[in-house]
Image 1 (cartoon, helix red, strand yellow):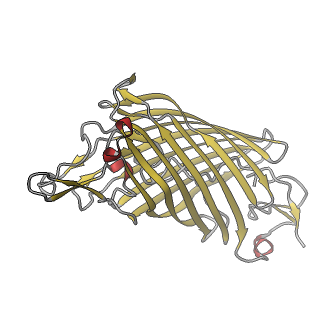
Image 2 (tube, helix red, strand yellow):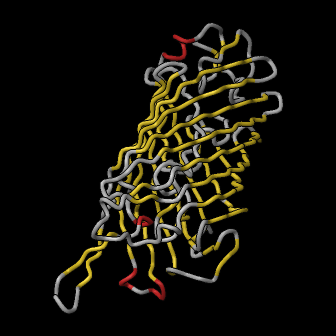
Image 3 (cartoon, rainbow, N blue to C red):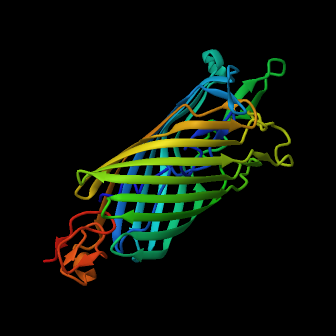
Length: 368
């Protein structure tokens, strides 16, 4: 596979892609890595995992850095997993989830009473995708894929810290900030679109995606803000194995909403007004392919940040991952062939003469 990071996981879908809402949580996407997911070939399987690390102690007021701090640091280490299967040549189904090794907010001046952390699995995402348009020619290829995902909370979202009331001796519990909860606790709907254009003679690929997540209410009476992002990618292959891609991504999140009829006895442990943001990232990405494996890495560099009120912003965010693709049946390529040569990664691409795959640039192999 020579397509540069085309199957990245992503800034996407639990609140892990970029920590932004002070005392309230991160961005609105549960798919880690800024996902750009097309469809697989029929009966093709992809196993994909990536590791994402986030670290920040940078605060903003509107679009300007601020010396005001509400805590010392936030950091998280997150392992994301995806299993995808090409049901047909146009329809792919994937199941995705992720595990936090650590998700921690360190209190101001390293105050242990204001330090919160958690670990464990976050959300389960069911993510079907369908290729609605595929135009191929000698000069290039154009694809359009749409997806409709469903996010199911798996981890805890109501972890609390007990505080002893000195006069009565009673213990009162307050929910920890959304930033360190393993999930929002809500069921969300994910809308997705990918447009992909390749120019095989130039070994150049241009693609764009859009994601919109309609957030649901959780039993705690909280609704994290709806999330949207738009990304543009340009990638080129060097030395037949090395892929270089540059991504520009804009994303925004609405403020959190609270159901006051539910939150009668415990005001949340965060400032509701200090939620919601707009951001622009530039993300250089590298990938290297050998056989059925592709390894990749990217760094998200914020070039613009605007928050609704003083809150923490993005500082350091990096992702590295590994993808493995194979077919459920060894003879699947032969069954799909209409010519003498085929692409081992995209067997629907065939030819009667030797050449390169119009989809990924790999050398076509002769059928046996």
